[in-house]
Amino acid sequence: MPKLKSNSSAAKRFRKTSGGYKCKHSHLRHLLTKKSTARKRNLRSPDSIDKFDVPVVRKMLPYS
Image 1 (tube, rainbow, N blue to C red):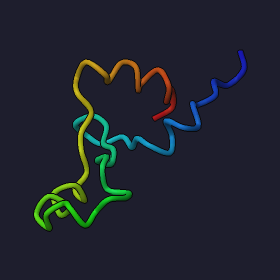
Image 2 (image 1 turned 180 degrees about the vertical axis):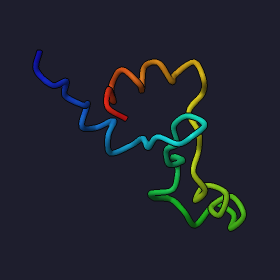
Image 3 (image 1 turned 45 degrees about the vertical axis):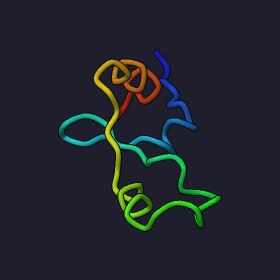
């Protein structure tokens, strides 16, 4: 049986951790002048994927 292909867009967005998957927050690309410094600082930290979305991400990344 041939190897499974990973979804390349998902491979760029999600990383496997011991507790699940992590990704970056949204809303940190443009229109940053109106956002507070604390809000932008909190958006820099990694976000985790909800437990309901983990099966979908796992299907897109079969070897992670």
